[in-house]
Length: 208
Ligand SMILES: NC(=O)c1ccc[n+]([C@@H]2O[C@H](COP(=O)([O-])OP(=O)(O)OC[C@H]3O[C@@H](n4cnc5c(N)ncnc54)[C@H](OP(=O)(O)O)[C@@H]3O)[C@@H](O)[C@H]2O)c1
Image (cartoon, rainbow, N blue to C red; front, side):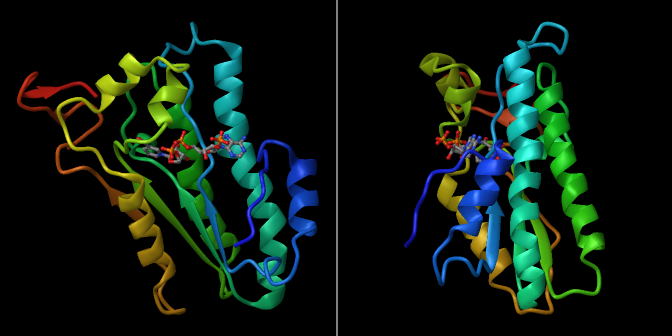
């Protein structure tokens, strides 16, 4: 294993770090664009600038920085797979989530567009788009407010990071002629952004 820290929002840092990778790690076969965040749950006109900027910088520009740094090598070697972690937020817009949803809609557009840009090459492009996954995501979104973060996953069974990873492995493990473009995965307890089945204490169907 070769691990290193990287701020995807900093193009110069991304370019330098990837150019400095030692062998054999410099030959990247699978890029999983996972870095991303939601910040706040406020209306667009009331949200903090740092929240709006943080989401766009990380979820869109960061993904572009890393992808653009990795793709030339993949094209040169004639093999590679870009797997973007999108979200059901790209299709289900919810109040207070407009900017986050917009960034994930951008990820969906980049996935589809990149597949076209790479048409005729062996490079594959996919997205894995989960619904509710219990990670640090909500804690980050609510600036460390544990109670508010826990409420997101209360009385239901969310996806785990392992569930999402299993889909990524499935997508990456297909034969070279198979390109899964998109995987949409939900907890069984979730049917839309606003339909989450909670039991037994709060019961019924409530907002996420
Ligand atoms: N959790 C959900 O319900 C859910 C649903 C759909 C999609 N997603 C997507 O899943 C992906 C992973 O999120 P998660 O749920 O695992 O949340 P998480 O636990 O907060 O993890 C986010 C990861 O992104 C990294 N990251 C954030 N900003 C970065 C930056 N500028 N440069 C490099 N790395 C950065 C974080 O690193 P540090 O810890 O070092 O900051 C962390 O490893 C995101 O793209 C998110 O939008 C999550």
